[in-house]
Length: 124
Image 1: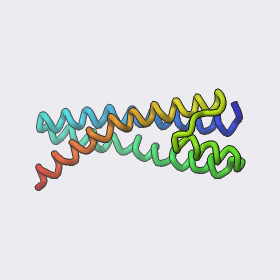
Image 2: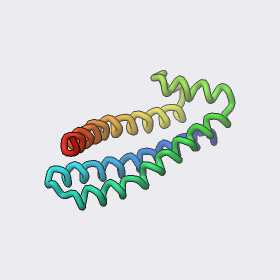
Image 3: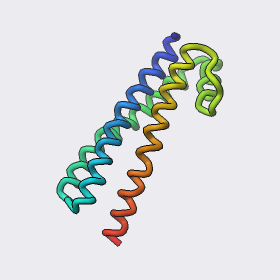
């Protein structure tokens, strides 16, 4: 595995870890809303801020790594993001991590949207 692919893979795994934290806190926020527990909800919302900010830093790191890559590597990264099949074992590992991250995001978004709708209805 090249250093560039390894750098991307490390950042993608960090992204998954932080997405997992955001997901867990979001589930707890939904449960607090269901109980009408505003104190817990507010505390969980504040706790969720740290992993969200860390995710923003991880995104910057991924963009920096991509920018510093050789043109061929950047083309392959772009292709993988657009759904191209991996061409070697390194790309396969990166692609699998990207897919794992996407599945978690797909589980997170509906929860986040439900919380937003409930909050809008309450603050109507």
